[in-house]
Length: 255
Image (cartoon, rainbow, N blue to C red; front, side, top):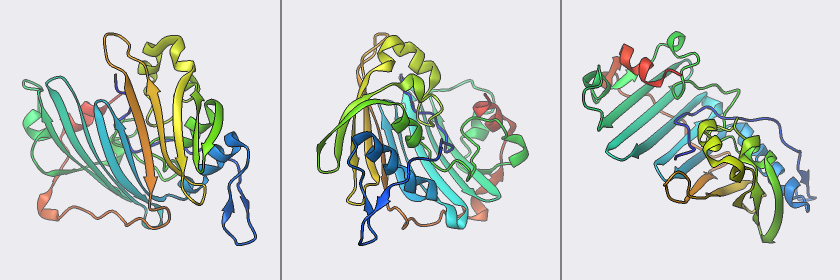
């Protein structure tokens, strides 16, 4: 039961404003909840690297708002099925490259597995889950929505925090799948988490621990951020490796 959604779009509601020290370095709020809320502020600047990991998903990438570009690679799978996906977005264009196994008999599979980057028609991906991106929502995980859903939190060390989170209050976050949250039932309202902030009080990692449900196993979902303000722009694929996206590509992600 993976809670990650295979998408770049996330949630970036405005968080609390951290204070500043006399040296100009942001001061980390003494209150643990306020420290977590403030830790997501710089994510909204849209210049960072990130990774997201769960039992059946491993994703990473970069968001670079100064160049209006973003890139993400993702590996997902359960049982015999697996999918590798890379998305590149350089406004106003975007491309996706897919490699799918365990889906024999699916119409258009050969086109999906062409080994080429498929150039996407922006007019065809409105509302299409997993293919769209907007710089109005730059966080792939929606960490601000997650920190707002924290029920209680304590500081346990320098830059480290633990507590509980109510995922029913964070279904708008990019890394949270609402159907999977419903499977957790009442347990979704009180899940343990751990968070680490860097020396400047910015969110470094957040890990949410999920119990075993429906015959599955317990999981840990982790989102990490790095290279704040120092990420590299995404680059477009070579023209020789690009084809126009097939109808099956849009249908695969339509929801």
